[in-house]
Figure (cartoon, rainbow, N blue to C red):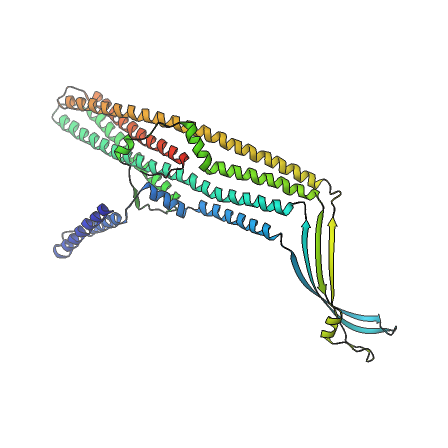
Length: 469
């Protein structure tokens, strides 16, 4: 950051001087002033981020993590509700009715009446035994909650690997741009030199055509490299939920870190550690345990269900055209006189229900087998990818060393060809071939360098280490 501050300070001073020149001497055109201001704003807007910051921004802003967190929150609410299902239920009700027409009265006579009835009630029920269904449902929901939380970790873990891949792709493409820029400069310099020699009669049109072709190819390579860099920045920004334009730069690793990459790994040791920390394994294990409890939940329907209940209630009756000999009692008196209580116990025995319970148990067992198979597949896949990751790392280390030596050899060879070409001892075709070989060796070396870094970070990923440069 101190270096960035100094850059901004220099740009700010330069802009002040430019404005002074423009206002006093009017030596600066409006378009040039606008260009300078835009340049200053772009420099100020650039933020250099490390790979740790890229991961942190992704974990903070990425919407996939938020979606996984919402699913975990729903699982937590399901667990809470299954615990609350053990509590008794308590319900109140008030029923009212009006009746018109002829009805038999206390006197035994039928008369036209208009009556009003009110029946308040309060009921409570609790399940004493239900085949363990509710208890097993609680246990199942606990495993599902653990699975939901683990899934959040899995989403984060997968995103971290994506960020590392995208981050290193940006670095790779940046180096590709630098390399192709240098190649274009050499090609343009060669073209100018060929043109100068042609003007004095020391070169032919064929030589010029070869140099133009080389320059055009270098320019195309630069354009492609710049496009790839733009796309890689866009990919990394999208992971961090940053909208274009991308106003950040990435920090490359130190050279000595690349040279000291550790490659001496034993796959079984990595696997043992990953089994304890890797979210994919934990997720598969939690789903298997939840499926086991789902079988117990389904079996609970084979057992009788015993319930205990109780309640209280009362009634109020009012006749609008009551016989004066039998007047309506007061509201409070009726509620008191008609007050009643009850206690009940019931048992519901399943005898035949179309084999639905049996089918539910069978489906739960099949799901359990699927989950156990998923767990085995996750473990098998983990050991496979770890073995492959170690093999890829060793291969990347060898390839890095080979391409480094090849690049150095091609640079030395091109230097010799360039010196001989300058004194006319090498024709333009041989010079162009040597330059192409040198450029290809540099690109191969850049690719090998970042492939080695990526393979090393993949091992850190499976070991659960923080990925840093």
